[in-house]
Image (cartoon, rainbow over all chains, first blue to last red; front, side):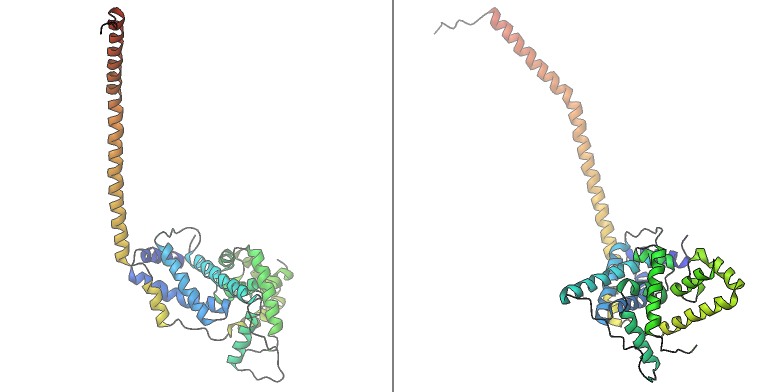
Length: 185
Length: 143
């Protein structure tokens, strides 16, 4: 059974497909920031992230008229579309450079470094960027996008067990890389 | 659930039990109640990483230009109504075409016996002519 939020999304998508401007604006306002965040974390580049967000919405508009509220939630479908577009771009980058996209270098623990929140943020982002793509995807979907584990597994096209394994490996790596950081409650 | 499984779940999904697989949440709560010190230590470890992960570089806020580009690309009510009009027109056209086809089919069905009787009449006439020719052959020697 769908949550009330998921049912509201279905209704908005159907209205958007009929050109209802209020529904279109509500969908953009509610989904765009998270979508942009997802793409930014996956691609590490703001311009590419904007392109992915825009392309994702173009697909939404294309399919909105034919949207059939089924078992899968719109939010999960949206994440899946955005992730596929992110992977297209990552593949294109790899073809152009002939190697994996240059991840930001994790500087690792430094001696007596007094890190401010901004520095901590940069370290975390760099560590995240250094993860293998599927592990990064799992962390982004579950931790940052706050998808439930069933929805995240659906968006990634894996089982919940496989998702757990990816998350576990990702978090172990992140913990090791960020072991020197301390964050107040 | 044993402590080992509890640890695995904390590692994977973090300290918030709301993010754990729904099927295992209840068992996890039971274990946390039966071994509070061990469970709390594991959750504290996971919570520490959760807090660190929450401090990321600020994400970009969607620009007004991006919002407007996306909204401009959305389907318009006019396009939707035009599409409906086109579909209605296409439906009427299809109905008329179907009616014509049905008319032709009816005509063919009704006309077929009439054509057959004409054909029989022609054949019958031809047969009579043949018999008459056999009875009274024309004089081919007359010039």
